[in-house]
Length: 101
Length: 186
Image 1 (tube, rainbow over the protein chains, first blue to last red):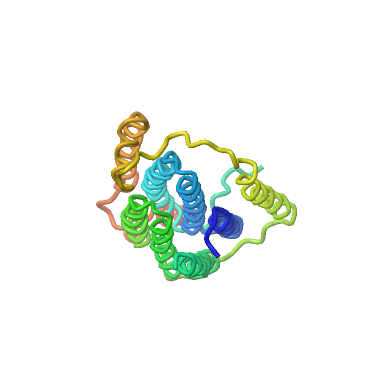
Image 2 (cartoon, rainbow over the protein chains, first blue to last red):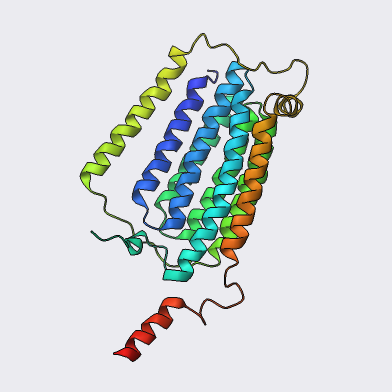
């Protein structure tokens, strides 16, 4: 049984749903970041698999730019997390509901 | 051979990412995420995208996870993490959305069976060479924009993280100071 594109797309979908479940489930901001990284990686797998099976390099280009965006997101996001931790002493999302209605 | 490798990698990646989102210890979650990133580069090597596999190893497993590890030194990494109870309506909407995404993902190859390659891979060169050719001809401007974006992100990260870097967190904690001032006022 040889590998088809659908194998990789199913794997990417499963990983994306795992990341989405993590985003829904987590309350700690750092672990929320981990879940978004999982979702970005799932998208990368789908891009690279499709580009490899169609013989088109633009999917791999998209994956490269996704990696660049993820790296800059982590740099800025971790800076913000450190500021939040210095200000509030916790990363729990429930402590940041400053806009009470 | 490739099939066996694919199944081994995919099972391991799924298990490791499940550990990442289910673990109650932040350090375990980070280690599992780093291991999953390394195994994803194995998937890229199976697909023949050698350059992407190397980039995945360098950027994700190297830079991003090292950055998380350093960031985690600021936080209380050993404490257990509380989870949240999501309301049922939100769970319903989000699971419906993800089911829709799944259907679209599985239907896309059947619909797009006659897709023509937009950028044909150059003949007779290996993958990193071909990526270099395409990246510096067709994708030159996005490449430069990404470079500027990375520079901006680096400056932003330095400025954000280095505020009050010269004082220790435990000695000069803003809201602890505020609380003691409040007590004095009372």
